[in-house]
Length: 443
Image (tube, rainbow, N blue to C red; front, top):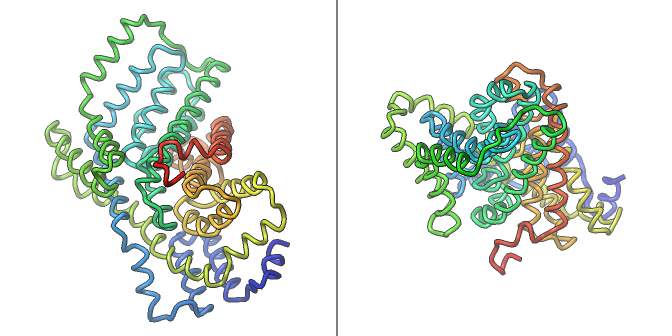
């Protein structure tokens, strides 16, 4: 019905659209890497539609990644890897544990907090799930949490990797839609913190119901004493996120410059502490290159794909088709969220951004949604997909670390999904959450 309405609005979709789409779906079903599936779909759409001469396809692909802002992606990935190898991530855990040791479920709350701290540096969900999971899951089980729940807690906490700035996802959507990454980072600060709080609250509620973990009743002096000891022994670890946040939000550093500075500072700290050696560099660079090698090819095909879709009139036709079903902004927002949640369940964030952002943004514009609010809503909704089957990347990461069944972990993650969805709705219907910190020009 939707496509019939789309075609009736003088947007006649022929085989130059359907063949590439079928190719893409078929390749994904055959477990072909997503960047290759997108590449085949994008190039075939360009060639069949005549949107771009074959001689210019290569140039268009390179134009997709010829952006200074993208240099920040490998830098933040490398910073997160260096952070783990130098042991600085354990300093975050010590401080987080000291902050929460006074309450019931203290170590569970500390796990969520350290996920947020790691997110404020690496910008990657999977890296955060792996790093924090190695440090905390066994201790969570020792504290009284069932192993599937401990895995779900880490997987949910690590979702903040793309939601708390600096985030690789916001760099990518900024590139695709032509929006400043620094502006998106500023807008994402409050929503990212709200998501973190929602995961903390969920864990506290579950702890209250099932009494997984007890908590020490400390006096104010005892608590402050433990906090002082933890901070005194690991204060220098907070120099790295401090540089990133101050540099970006003060306007003194671009995201790329902040990422480069963070890498250099983290490496120097590793050498000074004696926890990093020159022999560690090949493994760190290879690890970061592997992650970057998955992301950049997808981005490379985003520009020609967006060009082909625009020439075929798909975004405009989609807007007409959807708005002809209902003109209620409330229902249209719910529809967009439903599409994003469903897409997040079956595909990773980067291809979802590349494919869906150019299609859904005209719909958001049509109902008067602020473009910054749209970006925050989209990334937050896609972030839920990291703990929802069948893809659920964070579920696979923690399952690989522990050998626990993905379905068992996913079952324990349901309360976290529910509360995160409430935050998505809050972001979608309350623009101030995304725009309060922005200059007046963006509101």
